[in-house]
Length: 620
Image (cartoon, rainbow, N blue to C red; front, side):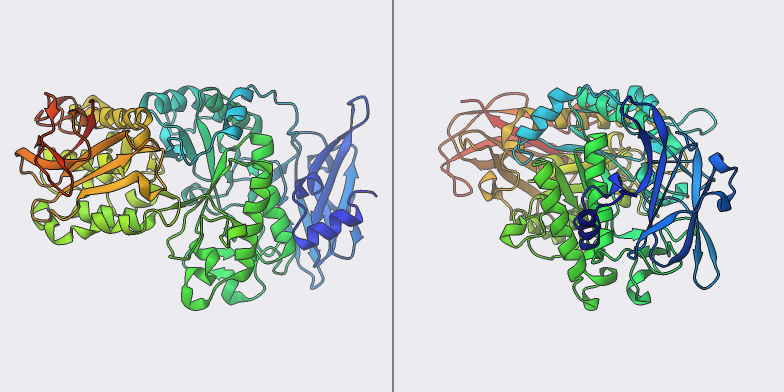
């Protein structure tokens, strides 16, 4: 059986077979004329005494089809002529100590819908993509100097059908894409859509890494969804979990009766806090499995990048620096980024990392891990903690806002306001805010304004764009009825307008990761809780002035320094009445004077409305 060449086997064991899905799994075979001839099943199970496949094609009688072991490293295979597309199947694995295990296929391209745990034969070929224009632009446009506004989505609770039934991938095209376009988001990040048994795990405890979850339809429906996103110039990112797996009996856990994909040592393997098992990323076969998986999603589904979950748990054993650095995982991450960028030069690899480990977003050849972005967890924690303070106390915590600029350019950052911040009693973004109802929304709009004008790209979890009052509920859809209320519709309009302001102003995205793109006007005004700074484009003559007043006190004739003589005008103010504000704003042009201020030769006077952000532009 010429299923796997000696070279394939060598590279698989070395962690360098980057298309291992070509060999493993269930593959439909065709002759030269395209006629179906059967399905080949291949699985890695080195600790098994016997491997059989049972399915619809043999009435689930495992004794009918016994796989042949073709190599001592534990590769088993069989070709069955009557196993057709859509047939369900599972592996029966018999161990040397007399146990019988029933396992889903680790490389299955599709799966039966929960609560069933069967794999399905599926032909990935044949979808006709229509996104060539988008793909060409993606491959030539640097992500660093472009606007990136990411909308994080849990597909099962964005919108649901009457009775709570999930919308399918193709149905979400007409629900989700118009919302993204209306609100000005450039990318969507899908919380894990690999097959997983429990809805409440949100996909973070997967069993089928190559299988787009059947909850929302078939794989080609997902291809269609992504194709339509691309046709509307929306990039698609996947939340990807290479670190840990579900412990359910039918999954990867103890696949052939012994530790296989996971660590041999119990201490490293068992993630007690999460109830999962950690994958051993130092094993060559696991590296082949996972790197192939990332490239698989990009090749077959045209995915534009990945948010890598729990990177701190990869850098350090169990996410604790006291346990030491996990060198095997570090080498995996370097190999992953090297191979991904070799194939897709402008892919997005975004680390969800809460550590201070150096050079996470630096290239491998410069001693980095090779990600091109990292979540700025420090910014998120400090900023939310600041905004939760009563304004009367904020002057004592002024550095919660300013400190982030001390390290903002040490890595390429994404500013995350993710699902993790609006669950488990943490409250929604607007409900975190202090004060009465009006003040909560004014604080929320100020937070959103800082979010969009601070150096770094942005990620906002669904519901945050219209100030959902309740925490995210994974079992029901977003509270869309809130858009009928002026404060919520105004909040949504502000987020939409801010996305478009960023898009129109190069100074708010071109130098997100360069010190030259940011300069404080005044970072020391603690007593009034006022922050003012400048954002610059690559052309330093192109700049915007941002001023935040984070107390309920309005200020008239407030003077700040500006870098250039001329006429200044207000682009946007979060206190506009249309957003639910008090409608105190700078309606007239402001002309600079020769009065020096804040180490600048020119200054302007402006109105600072309560709990607000204003963006000012020089119009010469």
